[in-house]
Image (cartoon, rainbow, N blue to C red):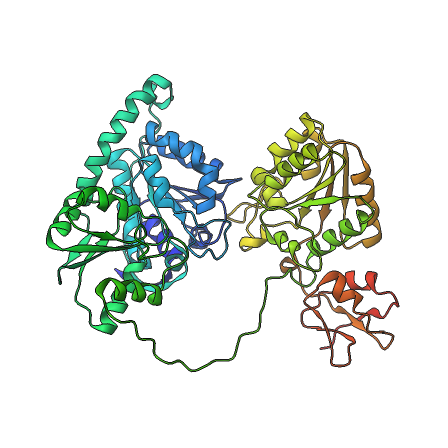
Length: 597
C-alpha cells in the first residue's frame, strides 16, 4: 500500500478506481464536483468519464453500464438527486447486474445549495442502502464496499458524504492493485423492462431485502460499539469525529454506537447497544434517520433523545460546539463558557459578480431596456448569475431550482397578463433542464423573453465543460451544440444574439425582444472572465470625475470604490477592462489606458 494526502472527494474517486469502476458520470455541483475532476486528473485508461447533461441523464447512462455488468458510479449533490429521482426509484425495483454506486454529496449548512435535504431520507424512501462516511479515509474504504454490496444485492447503493468529508483532507492508505472485474455484457432478460405486474413482485422482494441488508450491516467494519458507561451515544457521519474530540477534551465516560450504514440500521448491533445502556442520545446531521429507527427498535424500553426531544437541531452543520452542548445537556454537566477574548468584527463580504463578469452587463442592459415597462419581472435560475439579485442590479426576483426560471416566468405571465417576464438562464443550465421549459412556452405561446447568459462554461462549480463548449470532461474535442439553433428548433422565432459588453446594441436588442408578443429569446454571449487573460489595457477615472458615484450605484462592480474625497477609483488589479462603467458615466470621466506594469 502507498499513502497519499487526499481530499475526501479525491479519496472517493480513488476508491472507485481501486474497486474496478469502468464508467463514471455526473453533473457538477458543490460539494461533489471534485470526484469526477479527480477521475479526469488521474486519466485511467480503463475508466470512461463524462460530465452529463443533467443528473437524470447521468444516472441512466451509469445504469445502462451496470445492466451490462460493468461497475459504474454517478456523482451529484443532494439537489441533483431530485433530478435523478425518477430513474433511481425505478432502479430500486429493476436492479442492476454490475455494481452501481450513487455518490450524493449533502450540504448541511447549507453552504452552497438551495436546500439542506438529507439523502439518507431519500435512501429510506427508495429502500436503498446508504453509506455515511465520517472521514476521507473511511470514504475510500466505503466506496469499495458499496460496489461489493451493490453486486451482491443487485441494487444501486448510495454513498452520502457531506461537505466536511468531501472537502477535508487526510492521509489515505491506497491499494496498489486495482480490482479486475470481468464484464460479460448485457444479457437479455424480461425483468429489464418495468411493468406494473413486475413492480408489484419486485416491491415485495425489495422489502424482504431490507432485513437481509440490516443483518449484513451487523458485521460491517463501519459499524462499531465502544463500551463505556450506561449513557449511550449513537452517532453517524462526520459527527463521529467531533464527538471523539469532545469526549477526549473533557474526559467523558459514555458508550458509543458508531454507525456508518444508517439505512437500513444494523438491527442486531443496535439491539445489543440498546440492551447495554439506560438511554441514548442520537447525534446525526439533518434528519432523524437513525433516531427514528432506534425509537422503533427500542419500543419504549429506554429513552431516546435527539431531534424529536429538541436535544439536537434539525438544521445546520454540526460542530464541536454543537455536539458539546448536546452532550453536556444529556449528561447533566453545566456548560460553563470560558471567557473569550473579544475579536474585532470581520468586515461583511457578500458574494458578488466578478469584475468584468458578462452577466453584469447583460443584467444592466435588460434593466435599462425595460425601465419604462409597467411591471417587468426578472426570473432567475441556479448559477453565478443568481447574484444578480443583489443591489444595485436587483435583477433576480425569483430563483427556485435548475431550469425553473423559464417555467416560473410562464406561470407569472399567465397569472398576471400584461406583465413582462424575463427569464435568465445560464448556458450549462439551459442544457441541464432549460429546454423543456422553452418547448412549453412555444407550445402554449406564452409571452416571455428567455435570456440565455452564455459565458461558455459551467462557471459556478469551477468551469467544467458542457454540451455547448466543444469539449468533453476529458478535454477531447466534441461537437459544440448551438443554443440559437436549439431555440429555433424548439419553435422560438424571435431570437437575438449579442455581446453584452456592446452596451448600446444590447439595450436595443432587449427592447426588441421584450416588445415581441410571444416567446422571444436573447443570447448574451461573452466568455466568463476566468477563461480569458488579463488584457494589457485598463479603465481609469480621470480628473473630470464629479463624484456622482453613478457608476458604483448603477453597476456595483467590485473593482470600483470611492476614495476619501468621494471620487471614484478603479482598482487596476481587478479591473478586466470590460468598459461597462464608461457607458454609465455622465461626464465621460472613465477612459481606457495602458495597464501599469
